[in-house]
Image 1: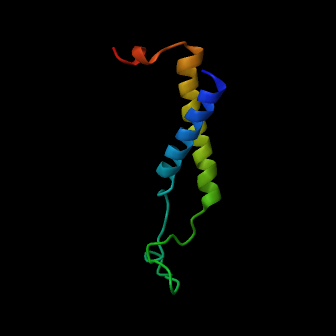
Image 2: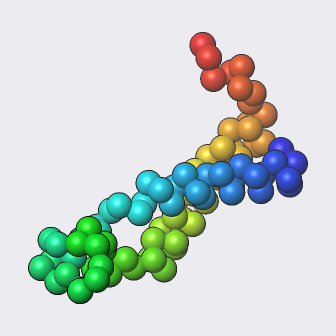
Length: 83
């Protein structure tokens, strides 16, 4: 796997994992009974974006490590996935 394709795969994985991680543990202003005037009641009270970025990075690194092991270390191909 070349460096450019590795970066591209990791980039795509990172964004996919971000959209998976974003909704976990979010409490809306409506659920917390703390609606600020002029804001959407469904907006999160505290989004904890740094935590989500760190969790996304760790999750995507773990998934990428599995992909790298499968294709680079074990020299498997996409055809080998189908029995």
